[in-house]
Length: 453
Picture (cartoon, rainbow, N blue to C red):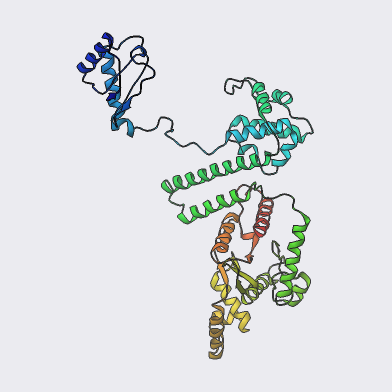
């Protein structure tokens, strides 16, 4: 570095320093002691040069100057610039927010009413830290029993030998309560914790998909893996949602008024989807959204015939309009998904043709029809090709597979009504396969949840 300015006559010590700098071939570093430079001097520095001024107890030796030269060379090299930042971890940790967990637990310990703001959607498994899971679970048990949860009453239920950052359990609970500010943000903290847990579950599902795809067994088809992934994502989306709970009666009243307006606009003046059977519609007001209707009867009583007639009438009456957001919405009739676990799609189509043409299905199957009958069947088949009626003839479906396929049809084509023929041919999730009654209960419960979604 070049130093310009007015300077007093250098001392003998400064002359020795200059000589050492020249011998070390480091002409652009000048080191001064306080006694060599007056504090009122002004210096002008040439561009791209360094100036190091440091108070020294003594003058540097030649070895010290060479070490300075080496450090300066390392600073100027590209090796140091390309090295990774030591503050950046070499791995990515799972999404979590420890501060939100501590803030929520502290708010609950200060005021137990904060627990009821999050208890309807937040569970102990949603916490990232195991000790926080234990604290939240114990706090919930105490509050539900009508007891007060404070650091004093809580520490007796937690292992005393647990070390939390050099603190005991009692000290940690007291610190959580001392640093809690207010319970106003308790619900926001709970939503943050739940969202972080949701992201961790998404990562787990994604990792499972990759691992299974790499090491899939021979008898595990890719389509089955897709349906299994859809099932896991659906369960993750439906479990523990924090957007439920109580709502104002005015909101429900608005929905009821909208339903009455739609009934006035529909053909038949029904609030639900018309089945095409006048007496049945007059009794039920059509098929209502979120309803699960089970048709029961002995074999050969016409359950499948009734279901196919209703499905055909709804699909035939379908009429949709474009909404303001560009999506299509059914204003009359509906799009029908028919899960035929007993009959094939061809048999179902033959039955619908027979019902519409008034030609016996046995005559159609045996070919005992006239030319006029064949012309009639052809004309009706051309008309039926445009019906929004989708048939899935897969047998032995599980309730999770059915749910995944129904949601896929809803996403791709739209869906207003689902017909299942029949419930006894469905399978449960496998958790209750030892008891058929519990399995059927699980199936109907899942179907009701699907109808409401």
